[in-house]
Image (tube, rainbow, N blue to C red; front, side):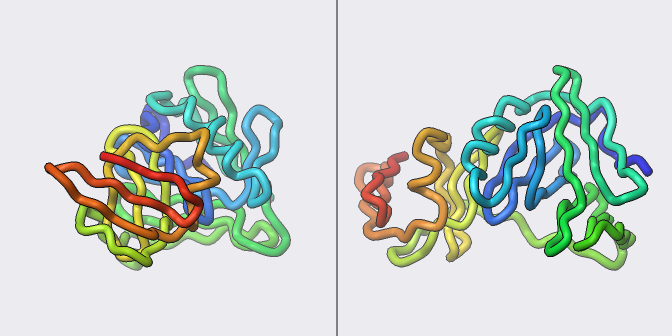
Length: 194
């Protein structure tokens, strides 16, 4: 089975509890564990995985094949291969089509599909007031990237990948607004400014 990603370009990369590739048509592939050219990335080294896949920003998919055992192999025009093998204990990967259709590799490798009519995507977050006490829940790299907080607000800035591990899941300690600029201090001590 092939996913409808051929000729689609990677627009953004998201990191929350999974790492997701978002394509220019709005479809996404989320991974709990994946390999890039043979190197495995999972919960233990997800920041290294983010640093590795950010290189795919703008790359075009040349194929996206699901194997009989539930594995997924996505190949790109720059020669990079991203794969995900089935996992025994959790979902391995999830594809959400631009139309809302869903394909998921369940624990153990069974692949389940749902039509667009049975699945609806949550609304995209929009920039808003960042609240003290909120938590960083997602980092997005690429066009329209930024940092999303648990209250639904977004700080639209380029994510500093060298500090990614200091950002994700951190709590907002203070927010200072001055002359149109916003400075957010996180519990890690890192300050983000826009």
